Image (cartoon, rainbow, N blue to C red; front, side, top):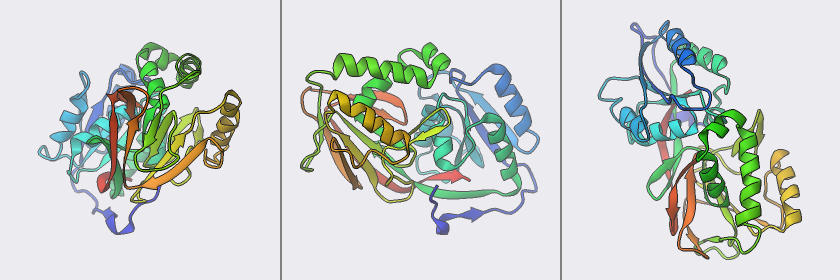
Length: 318
C-alpha cells in the first residue's frame, strides 16, 4: 500500500483506552454471533469498544456519520467490502480513521490496505495498534457522487455482481466459485451475441463490454490469490486506472484470465484498452441503462457514470 509520508500521524501512548466504533454486518459471509462475541471480547482488552450490529442498507453509513460527534478514535468495519464502503461514505470529510476486520467472502479492502484477511490475525493486528497508533490519508474514487475504496465497474462485471448479490446464500456457501459460475452464465446468456457496450467519453478506441475502474490493487482475490487487472492502480496515485474490455472472442477469455491470475495484469492483450485519468465519464451505447458497482456492491443502472478522484479523502488506521 502506498501512503503519503507527510500525512502519517503517530499519537502518544493512550492513558485511557481509545474508543472504537465497531460496525458489524450480521449477514456478511463469515460473520456469526459467536465470532462477533469473541472478536468484541478480544478488542475490549485494549479498547473502549462500542459495537453496533447493522439492521439493513444505509445503517453502517449513518453510524459512521456520527462517529466524530461521539468522540470515536476510529471506526472498524466488520463485514465485507460493502460494509467498508458504506462506512467510508458515512465518514464524509471526517478525520476519524477507518479500518476493517474481514467478515466477507473476499475482503479485498483489507488486502489493499495491508491488513490481514484472516480474522484472528486481523484482530491481533488491531490490538497491536493500541500502543502504536498510526493513521494515513489515501485517495478515494467516486462515481456519480458515491465513494469507492478500491474498485468500481460499469457493464459486464457489474452485471455479474448484481446476480451474485441476488443469491446471498450461495455467495456465503460457495464464495468465489459462485462468482465464477454466475459469470460464466452471464457471459453465455447476455454477452455471447450483441452484448451491451460502454465507452469512455472523448477517448477514441474505448468501446467495450466493461470498464473496470481501480483506485487500488488487487482488483479482487480468488481464495488467497490476488487478481490483477491493472498494475497501474494505487491508493495515492491521484488518478484512477481504467481498463476497458473490448468485445472478446470466445477464445480470448482464457488468455485474459491467465494474465490476470498471473499478476501480469490485463494490459497487453489486443482486446484490452488501458487508461489513467482523474476525471472521466463512462456512457452506455446500446441500451438506455448499464449496471454499475462499487467495491463489489451493485448500486443500480445508469446511462452515464461520472468518475473522479478525491485526493486524501479517506483516513486509514494502519
